[in-house]
Every structure is written in C-alpha cells, then in structure tokens.
Length: 138
Image (tube, rainbow, N blue to C red):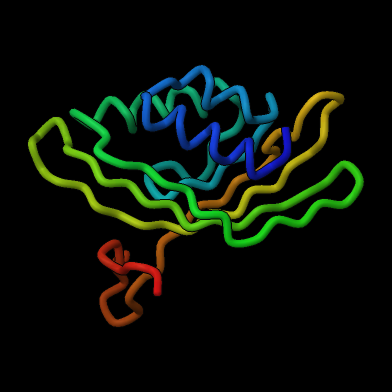
C-alpha cells in the first residue's frame, strides 16, 4: 500500500470511528504533536487513547477529509503534507468545522509505510495569541 492509499484508508477509519484500523498505520513508537492538550504523545497506546478521547467527544462525524498536498519517498523514509478537515457534531450539540495542517514522517517496514512522527497544527493570531481555527485553506 502506498502512502496516498494509506492516508485515504486512515481517513475512512476516522469517518467510521474505527480506532484500531486508524492506529494500525502508525509505528509502535510514534511521536505525535497534536493541536490540543499535551505537548507530545508517544506510542500507539497514547495515540489510541487520544483518538478515543477525540472521537468520544463527537456525537457524529458528518465528514472527514485528508487532502494530500505533497508526498516524497526515498528508500525507507518518506514524508507527507496534508490539509485535514472535519465537520462533526459534538456530544454537547455544537457543530465543529475545522481545518488543520499535518506533516507525517514515515518509515517503511517490510509490508507497508508506518507513521513514525506526526505534527498537526493550526495557525495562530499573533495579536491575540489564540488559534485561528476558523481559517479555511485557499
């Protein structure tokens, strides 16, 4: 499975709240920089817990899309830049419509590419110091 196919399979797993399938695309010692909470998460157990917390905060996922911007592969290392978008309803009944950026670094195991490091971010407004979560990509 190539990286773009892997990204699309992860996208489907999140749409279906299938945490175990989503986690299967990550290296066991993945290091993750998320847009919320802890400074970093490490390992698939931490990732599984973070995904459970995030998806558990949603009453339903209306849409989730990962748009691949760029992929570069060399030997057993690769990286992929994406724009991610979720539209969902929270358990409190609020609507979530958010874009964020993500860069994932991959290592090749004998059968597939695994995410070894992932960094998600949103721009921030330097005047307020707050995240600009209402921005949409052009």
